[in-house]
Length: 190
Image (cartoon, rainbow, N blue to C red):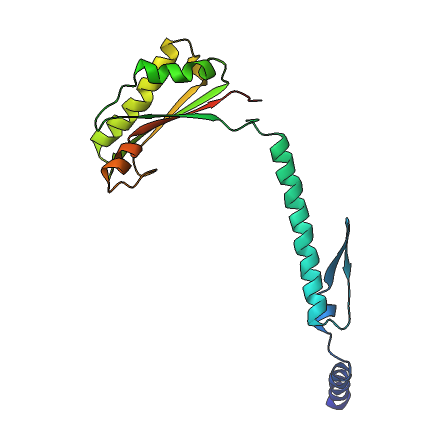
């Protein structure tokens, strides 16, 4: 009674061992990309070179897709040009821009579609006083631009009480460069 069952199991085992094992290519087919026609192809013997070629084809396809996305975003960008930038420098605790400084921005600002104002200090660490100075610098420029006819809804302010240095903050000249307001005036928006 057990002999037929034992013979059946033995024959199954022998049959399974007699067949050749599947190659890596049969288990994991390679994606071959031909122009815009990706397809799975089963290759029985895959060399390292074939694997590298397949990998490069995939990489090239991914790069082509990314390039199309970048082209789309470039064509549909909100800003059509680089902003015109103005920089005002301040004394150590100064927060008020002079009329001469404001006047230099007004012509471009009156035809702008967006204005970004960033107040900066030469602070080493963020303190409440440094925050206040940076914020007042940006707010003062915004308020003066609006006072002289710029639409308030296109003016945006930001501030950084320390960091974002343009000069060496360990020298007096560098600190003088870092005490500033940067004004980016965009005149061509969508």
